[in-house]
Amino acid sequence: MKRALIISPIALALAGAVSGCEQAGERPVAFKPAYQGVNTRLLDGDLVNFQVKMTGARGIEDVDAYAECAAAQYALIRGYGFARHLRTTVAEEAGLWLADAVYTISPALPRGLKTIDAEVTVSACAENKIPTV
Image (cartoon, rainbow, N blue to C red):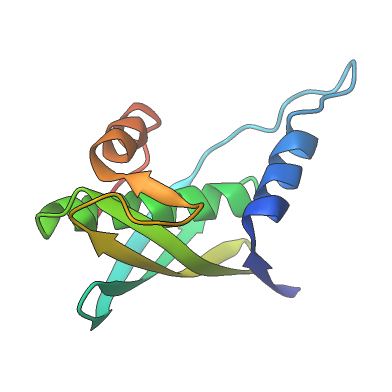
């Protein structure tokens, strides 16, 4: 079955709230991700596209986190300290999750709701064993 979704910050918040609910007696699903690479494309100046692939994701949040880690590391590689999320599209087919994300990178904290401090994010990615670029 093929699914395609566009992620919004509100949808992520709701999904996170729902995924945090566990009924008595339920066993948590084992999380065994296999990160299968990042394709990075500079679209225009500070606009960057990230395409990530993985298997073993528990849901959209895991694939989105992988793309965010890639964006944060890319910002640092380019000498910038921040990124801002513009959009992410996620699809899943036969257990292979694909995300197509677009971020802007900048030397100063950008305006907007979904901003990322690249150093903090890369550190959190390392702690959570999520690879970066």
